[in-house]
Each structure stands twice: as C-alpha cells, then as structure tokens.
Length: 135
Image 1 (cartoon, rainbow, N blue to C red):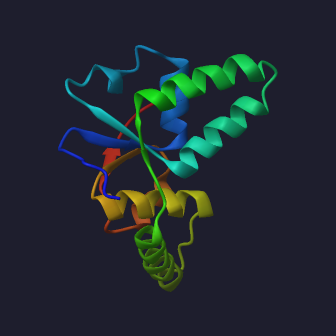
Image 2: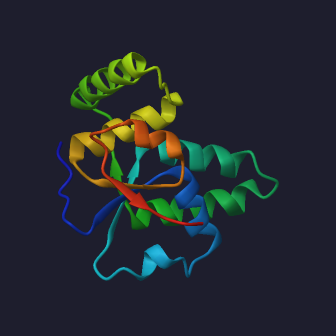
C-alpha cells in the first residue's frame, strides 16, 4: 500500500523522534502542514526504548501518543527490493550502515520522502533525500 506523501511529508529517524518526544516545542513541529512519517523500524526502536526505561508504562504511553500523531511507513516486498539494492550498493562502496538504518533508508527511498536524521552514515546512500536537523 502506498503512503500518500506530499512536499510537506518528512520521515523521522529514531534520534530525531526521541528529540521531539523530549522537546514538544522542537523546531520540526512548527512547520506548517508538516506530515510526519515513522518508518516501522523507528516505531520498534521507540517502543523498545520505552519498555527498557525505568518509567516504562508512562514512556510507552507517550510513544504511543506520538506514533498515533504520525503516519507509519510499513515494510513491504517493494521495500525489501529497495533494501537489497541499497545494501548491495553500500557493500560495493565499502560503507555498510546499521541494519535498522538501512531499512529506514529503504522506506524513505521507496516513498521518495526526506529523512530527518543526524547520523552521517545516511550520506552514503545517494538516492536518499535528507533533511538536515540539529538536536
């Protein structure tokens, strides 16, 4: 299923999502008409972090409220094809990246949406549209 995206759509990497959760006045939230997308691996990482915290019930509830305000980017067979192609390209460059980040990138490339991330290793993926953010 294709996610309807627009020029105002932006996918969030885990570190950026965490920054937004920590700062409800984060600059990204002030964008008029912005639609925030969460790749499924990001949702998993956020839920893991909440469950692994000292205040797991409270943090998990906060994560769920945030997830419900965003649109999820689900992994499909098309995503798997994109992932395989990107992974091979990174291997050929000698620049592998963490698995979850590769799935996140594959989802963004598939849906042609910008990824808000701070990790520099995403720069090795030529097809990936990036949104530079500061935390």
